[in-house]
Image 1 (spheres, protein in one colour):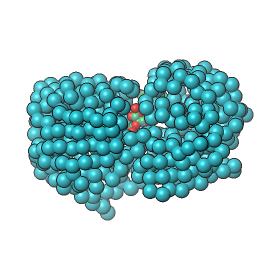
Image 2: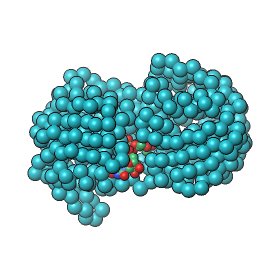
Image 3: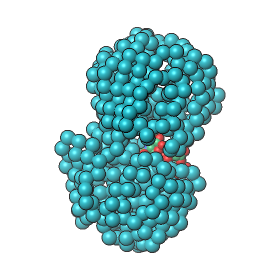
Image 4: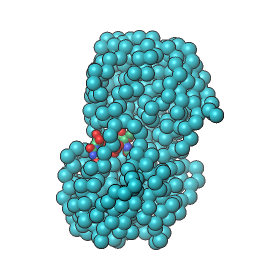
Length: 428
Ligand code: EPU
């Protein structure tokens, strides 16, 4: 992955000067499972509105090595899985990408075995895979670990009743994809409700899968005992709600007017409610959000929660907003145990933040921010540093910019278009 670049930002010193429109790309956390689902289809799977992201390229690379033919033309991607599939998930790419574990079920269904590394992803917490190990064993899979490589093998997956002790986006997706080619009835209790999951399940159902309970926390899947699905139409990737929310914060802190186009405001209700409560003025349309000049923001408390609650992926941008709000706010990060650490760097910029344990931070605002040179620790914190750099006085440099490219398409081009001075510089 291209990590050897930095973004150099000229801060606006709290002024609301940016303006214009930004168009939201397809969702990262939808396109990755959608690509993985190609292994379930007998025919070509066509995806539309595919974003240009590092994680999409990485998933394409893994799938190609498995034996999926992939063609990409602008925002359209065609995937066709052949009959001679390799069962190996690329070790180097897989260990950097959490979503690689979604391939496990379809690969077990197609080849009876899979080898893979511990799936990585952003360093935001432990990222355990106990739910996968426990429930794939229950479905009749033997699992061993040698030289950091997991080997999964089965003589035939059998659907079971699965109860997740906590809601997990990736585990829900992984077990639905596993259940489709297996034998018998699968029931998943406490499944995740994120729109990326719901929309994929609707598409799979339209393509022949028997899934009921879509949009609820209890899903029922009737396995097809190896019979592949048939895609009848292209699948359009839904807009990235996290990118839309991130630009809403950019607008609230630094724009006289910013229109966020091609988004799905209904997927961001709680987040938009919090923005509004903190004093951000906006007009919410059907597929766009217009952020109006918003000054005099006020403190509010937020608590991240599984969908439809406040998204953990928007916690860091929102925390930057709270540094510019009058009063004391509490941020309670409930999902990941390492997702507040970046606040130490915001403090170096002048923010009044006290992290009193790994899940709680108090933000005292409003404080001016000073431009600094920072390293992006993960995708979403990297974006938060960009926003802090925009608000700050003077220049900021955000290193490790490749991590931001994992989830934000053409970030500096989009920011330049609305008037920000931002450059990408290669680091030798
Ligand atoms: N968990 C377990 N055991 C497991 C799996 C998860 O205890 O086997 C726990 C996690 O430790 C966490 C909670 O369950 O506390 C929820 O994690 P989840 O599995 O839902 O997260 P994920 O699937 O690994 C996805 C997104 C993340 C996003 C989270 C929460 C993808 C590829 N990743 O991660 O996206 O933060 O859901 O919404 O879909 C990002 O885009 O920056 C990102 C990290």
